[in-house]
Length: 76
Image 1 (cartoon, one colour):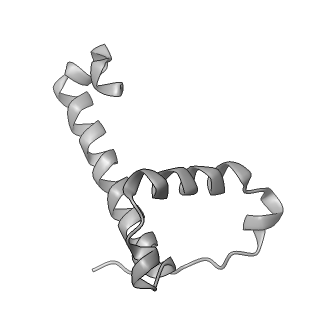
Image 2: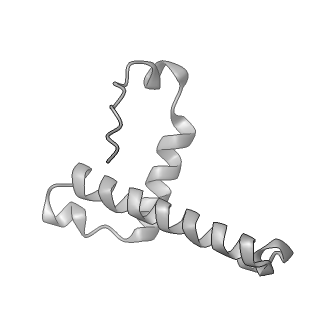
Image 3: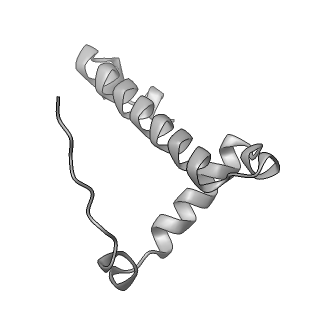
């Protein structure tokens, strides 16, 4: 749907959208490989994975994410 909006046809808009898509798919692929270790669970379709991720993000509360550990960034 976002491909039909006018800002997508600007070169910067197209680049930004494609980079965001790539980042999201990479994050989802990592999430899928880490959280679904069984081969049967790993065979989940992308639309189902997106739906589950959306549901988890919508249902998350401040109390749920408060105790998450912070990861150190490694540069270089």
